[in-house]
Image (tube, rainbow, N blue to C red):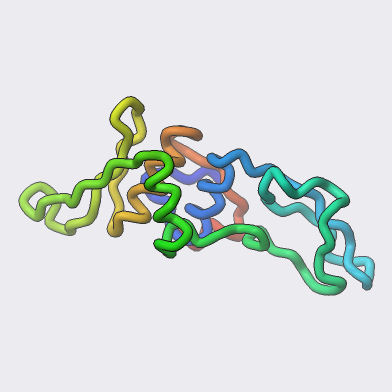
Length: 142
């Protein structure tokens, strides 16, 4: 389902960040019961057929994802390495508060309720644009 980048949050935002980083869809083979085959978004280091998945159970779309939009230990280094600029929103202009994030030389200025969410939205907007296609099961997190 297509979601506006400015509205992404939670798992849907983390999925979009992975896409912006060049992660790709990888095939998950059937489990020991012959069920639950499907696809996940995986880092480029994971190649089809080379990863050992758990022997039973469904592998959801969050299997490899990190919590870039909610964990400073994961999202913070990306903000630094990509040189995302952050600025708090003034209550005068934005009564709900929040943060602006963007790049000096690129379009992709976004805002969000936290610096991590604003920065991850800016990264996604700069790489993927104003709308992102995310799996339907992650839509509820957007």
